[in-house]
Length: 271
Image (cartoon, rainbow, N blue to C red; front, side, top):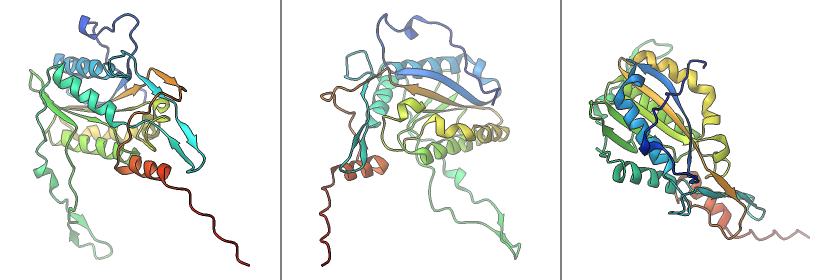
């Protein structure tokens, strides 16, 4: 893993934080693979600075200039934890990169031709076999094209660790097909993960598999795959401070349902 690296950013006025303002932290960008030296491309620097500024624009309460999150708390009755939702962070990021940075969201990448069935082999007959494809890749959170023609896809992690694996797999496959030239996954640090929706994907759990995705770069002719790691600025134990809203689907909804469920009635003892 020693050659995973973070690109150095040139200082620009638009990128500097205002003195005394503390918003969401961009910790680092890991370049998993870079075929074609895209990291030295001015277009990469432009989109990188744009998504870093978009990350650092996220604050809570909105307009405060600071990203403060309520620390997780245990609920003995349900044996669940109260944590912050992730949809708010993703939505604020997308709003800023489109409305403030001026990047145009282009919708979906055409993945139709990537759904071809590979020729496999059955055992023990050794006959050729093509397994039916019964699910699709799904859309990316944000797709745009730079002035120099680089197609960029960005995913902001809102799901569990399985979702993170799917995102990196999907980005790698689309990079290999040259449908995009830059793929970025934004996900929480281990510290931030502790205070977000149950089992949210995070860099700590993903780190043992980075070598695998690095090797997938050998199938890419011209493309860059990166992970950006983000973190809150501050935690509070103030009981009047609200948690970020939790969604109703997936693990978030499951945890919310358990927390809000009424206590089960004790069973009567048999005589």
